[in-house]
Image (tube, rainbow, N blue to C red; front, side, top):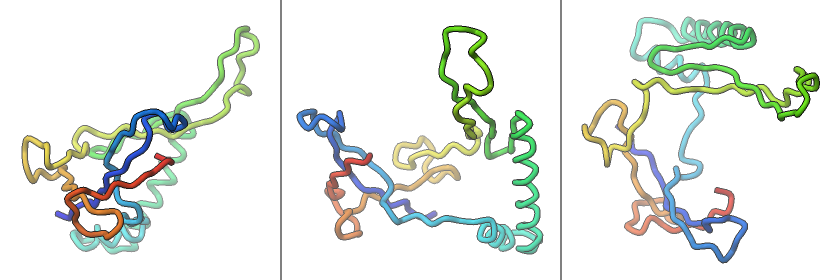
Length: 159
């Protein structure tokens, strides 16, 4: 199991108020994660199964096309062991019922509700150490990139 590198950051409790107290929080170290595309995931699946990369990639692309169709029809897509995808609408409230039309919808959002079997757990506070959904977090210094006792305090006004 690999470790996820995290850093300790600080910011003002009320970001716009320079007189508000400083708060500290943990976030994943920037630039430390990779983006996996369909081909890379297919390669991972090929290494543990009997399907070729091309077969897995084709199935995944077909799944995405079918999922788009189901979602644009207003339905939900539940993927066992992963979660449920669904849409929500953003619409400002109006006082008169006649003025409430589909033209008022400002945004259609794609949402995801994680399946309980996929919920990830911080291994350092988990009741079962080394469980398959546990994430091992390693506090590192933001400056040096190595392990650090203080975690490297970083000011991050964007968080």
